[in-house]
Image (cartoon, rainbow, N blue to C red):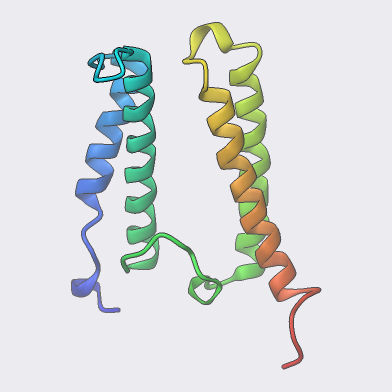
Length: 138
């Protein structure tokens, strides 16, 4: 896809960063229809993370979408290893946020980070298996 045809990603990144800044630093959130400001803050944070992911995907692959198909990867062997390392790191950070730092972060922060880390690990393992042990005859 040509550079001029690449989808816009800067707006998603800016809005996602602002929402995450609000969640992590400012802490402003309306009570909402569920009458819980902390739940609203969690929804704002998850929305910010989602927008940052969309911005990363659009910037990295120069196309709309959400799923990084295997044929989009330039070097799957190296990238899958990096994805696995990032997944393990994210799970470790999630554990730290859910245990020693629990008093300083919103309650579900560790759980959400561990979920994201496990999804990264699954993606990295899928790519490793697809190019290695489960690769069909060519």
